[in-house]
Length: 118
Length: 111
Image (cartoon, rainbow over all chains, first blue to last red; front, side, top):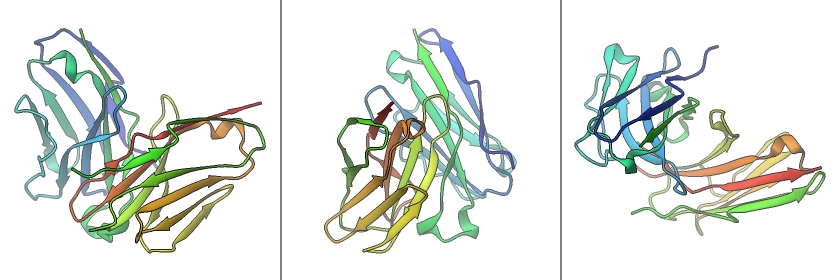
């Protein structure tokens, strides 16, 4: 079946512009995560959605970052007034979520969006 | 701040060599330890989810062990092949929603 897809695969923007990154999770997965990997760093958690519950936004680095998940499926990560330190690979993952055992819930990742802020 | 560390940072081996690398993580509030394989320009691929102390998982030539009391996991690759070249990531799951990742071990298998 189809995996997690993300678009665009690459995005180059100028400092100060807003960007939107899109994630299409695996059908039937109720949990959706956003992570990013900056140069030389590990994958860093940004935000988590589970069904209709309020999202866990504890990883968002600043109020310039926001995310939505419409209809429990597609998610958009928006970065306003981009800065050079926002340059990173942004990865989305989905998992079965509430239907599975939380401790063994495998997260399936998309190929990522490489964001470059000039 | 949770500390998940992986070593070595990078590794070059010859085809046919066996190799292993280490992931260390907090020994308290442990729920699961995940291993992923990430090839350049592809999605990270889930290898194992390990939850029980003493757990050992195997997938083809790759296996992993888990020690939750001392907070470490080993990943082993037997008879490395060039297609095993990738970054291997471990990720710790505590009581919250997120995975905390290490920075990875970059493996290069040469002919």
